Length: 92
Image (tube, rainbow, N blue to C red):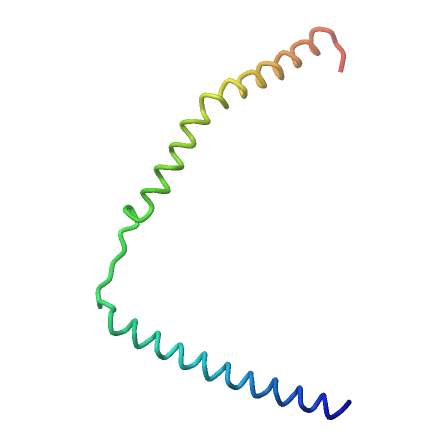
């Protein structure tokens, strides 16, 4: 049983060393590739980047408001009516 554990440990160690080497090599390649294509003064226009999100959010709001406002109005009217009724009848 101890031989099996030793073999498993050595295989794990070998695999982890190879994984670290592969990750290091991949990072080096990606860094070199991005440095080769990067412009020194890169700017991001967030207005253009998020314009689709803003458009969809406003579309959802404008579609929801005609339904939500009457529902909230009815809830407020019922709540106010219950308060007035309780004050008039004296029941808590």
